[in-house]
Length: 190
Ligand code: 5GP
Image (tube, rainbow, N blue to C red; front, side, top):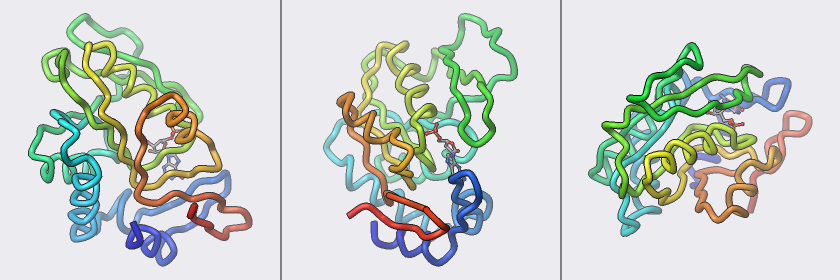
């Protein structure tokens, strides 16, 4: 998505440790016209794929997931971060390693909202090592549902998570794929 690359070039900030800051349009302030365009693009990519539900993790995936779900005309569900690993049987739970915080956390989703037979589109803001997406895949499989694919706003290909998921047979569509941020210069995959 050309517009995503232009936004990243104009407003993105490369931080130490391979972190890209996009607080001006995605992670704190949200450019709502652009959010709408992201939702439309994700819906175009997954049109005709039989998606019945969109799933993300709170909090930064919620806006994009909602925009995509609105365009696809399906419900949006977000997995909640849980403070402890003690969870009851009313939820599906999985442990995710946070790339940005360097810690593990548990995410849960109610068994009432993720159903066997669902075709689930996974959505997130960033894809780095792939831990967040793999956690969502695990939740979907626990429910006996199917993964239709993933749609990501910004993939950092140099961390390898996206290509590893593709190699595992999961369709991963990213609106921008960053090949390198070496020396603060952003290079996109072509
Ligand atoms: P992964 O689990 O693929 O390693 O990392 C994805 C998650 O970490 C995303 O949900 C996102 O919240 C966060 N993340 C990873 N890299 C970045 C980054 O460069 N910038 C921001 N803002 N978040 C990131």
